Every structure is written in C-alpha cells, then in structure tokens.
Length: 108
Image (cartoon, rainbow, N blue to C red; front, side, top):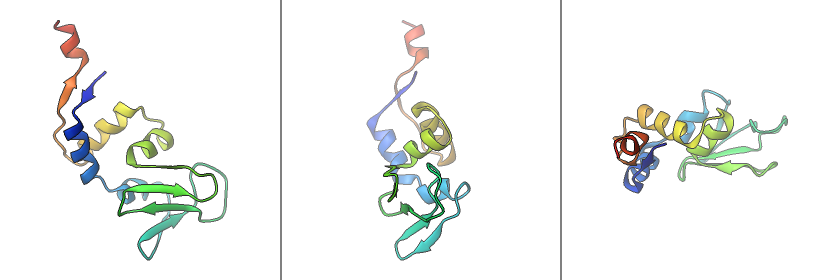
C-alpha cells in the first residue's frame, strides 16, 4: 500500500481532465458548459449523465451516481483507489510524493 501526500493528490486533481478520461468509453455531447451522455452505471436510453468540466465532476440525474475522475475509474474500470491514482499520475505525468509505502515498511 502506498500513501501519497495531499500536495501530490491536489496537483493531480488540478491536471486531470474528466472529459478526456470518460469520452473514450461513453459518447458525450457538448451542451453549453457541460457534456451529456447515457449513464454507464444503469440501463437507460436517456442522456442523464452529465460531465461538468469546470469542477471535473460527473452526475447522473436518474441514478444519482456522482463523483470525480478517481471515483469514475474505480467504479467503471473496477480499479482500486491506488490503481486509479497511479494510472492518473502516469497519464498526466504528475510527480507523486509518497508518505508511506510497503518498501518503507519492509526496510524497518
């Protein structure tokens, strides 16, 4: 297990683009300041899934699913929190600062 500094997680959240992460999986249409599409978390033909670029958040108006890029990867891609964070550190080339890792624990 790895714990990251709050600073590195904040830097990651500033750089990630939720639309970039979601759009390869879900067809999204731009309307004003938002993107809409079919929710990937339930069966529905309506475009109830909304991506809000300004806040890097998503929300489904029908099933109430909501979250950020990390939660999307955890639910949709079935990643753990750590896998999602490490994936985003790689994709967005953010330097991660670790507080604690298994390597540190093994050396004690």
